[in-house]
Image (cartoon, rainbow, N blue to C red; front, side, top):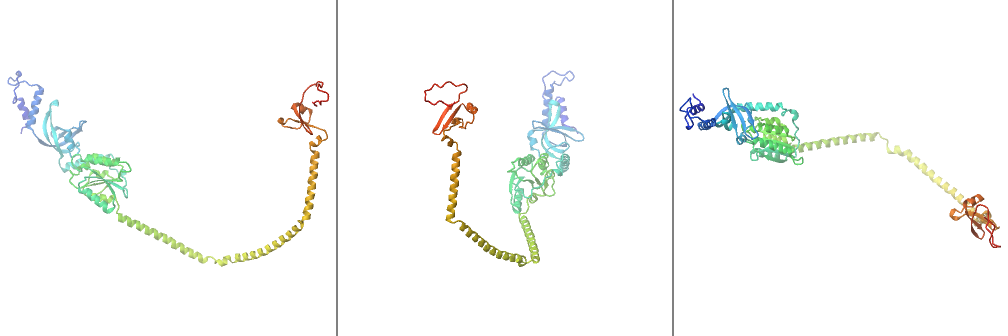
Length: 466
């Protein structure tokens, strides 16, 4: 059986195509001469017209996505290799992330790339070749992420006992969100933040990862205490978005405790391994997230009863101990009898002592009253006056002014210099200016050093003493 691609190329080489007006070849007189580019273009048109749309099955090799967004790969089996190209728009529409080694079925158009003299397939659609291939791809990705420690138990966080706010990443129109809200309402009403996302198809994995990172990036006062990633049941293809590496890494990096509730109890995705807790169903996730409010109330009431019983038990035990101590304690009269008798004795002695004290004080008062007669007081006052007058006369006779009455005078420094009495000639010369105190007044004088001159005043004038 011949290959149509090589048959088309053979027809071009045989001259089955538009004639060229160039000179004839020396080796083939009936063939026209073409340039390499013209031949490549004719070959490209022939191949594309011969092969409209094809479906191929093979293993991905050398998958690479470049900066422009396009992806390049090779499809191979045990006998051949075919290059392939996926344009940017088709890459975004793929339902999974292509990886080397995955067996896929692709649909597209066969064409040639003249720049490298090769033929290739332009891929429009790609799907995994059966469930066995999906599981093989899943196990390969699981082993890779597990080797990085994303599924390690050391990374798991404890779930809050009673979260105030719960964030839910799921489809806003499915039955999942209604089941979660109803279950939370029945168990323990809680504030819920829903981040709507696609849960299957192209772009679902990116939306789920973006929602998880969005909850994690919220400010502490508004972000939830717990995040539930939920989806209803479906085939492995429907749940494949939760096996994507971007979702697994977002769950592993989330600082908020997370619960994975993907599919039914028998469904398992890589998101279940990366989350802090796996729930078999979305409804079970709501049950894990919050306790039953009534059970919590009953538990608190039970603790209250136990606390009351414990307090009453200590109270009753203390009362029994007090009653036992009262029995062995002595009676009040037995304890206070001697003290009462002693108080009565002291009171009687106090009365007698007060009476005796009053009698003694009255006798002393009578004696003092006899000594305080008026005539006696007058004689004592007269004697005191005589003593005071004698003392005053003595003071006056010894005072400095008494000698002034006998014609004497005394010398002192000026009042500005302190007014101290001058008792020697040396002190007078040191003072320079002095004051002479007479009986009828004071005279200021100046002390001169050296020999004095003859008195030139009028006869009869009294000269200075210095």
